[in-house]
Length: 228
Ligand SMILES: *Cc1c(COP(=O)(O)O)cnc(C)c1O
Image (cartoon, rainbow, N blue to C red; front, side, top):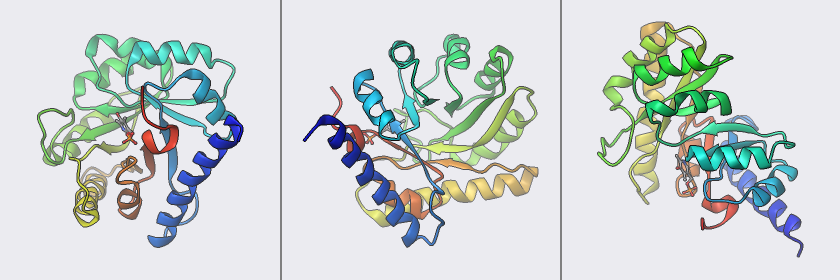
């Protein structure tokens, strides 16, 4: 089988998993955007996936991302920064990405706002299990941070992203995602906002995330294969 055919099959397989999860949750088709989590994957492979129809890619490491973006210059890809953000890197992030998923303090959002040429789309990272190894704010701090960011010019606060603790049990996966969804609802009510994006779900918990309202899933391994 040609590599292009294999790539098409892998993309189709993930799209089917998403579609099935949408149906099981009673959600309309195409309510979930697939982001290819392409860290440590080559630009040649990303090019094949893009030619097969993948439009959104998420990258974690700035230098690696900038090099791959240059190589993929002629491709129509919308880039999401999904890694941890160092405050001295915000200018480059603002220049190279349309979406930033890992916002966990006001200072980062305001630097992005002042350094970006166009309104940049932001998601606050929630750390629902309060793991010290991960970025993000506790569930209890998400709403207030969203309200503070909403008052900045030149950024659009759009919702929340989360990376829960590794968990194989689908009911426990769902219960964490449901809490982040509930946070979105509560934040909108409390501050009269209209946040509408939930970036949640990876290879091992895609179905649970779609069941609990994910609007973006970030899939690496099950889409591209194992990372180098
Ligand atoms: C690597 C990564 C993913 C994808 O993880 P897989 O388990 O390989 O699907 C999703 N989100 C973030 C933030 C990542 O760093």
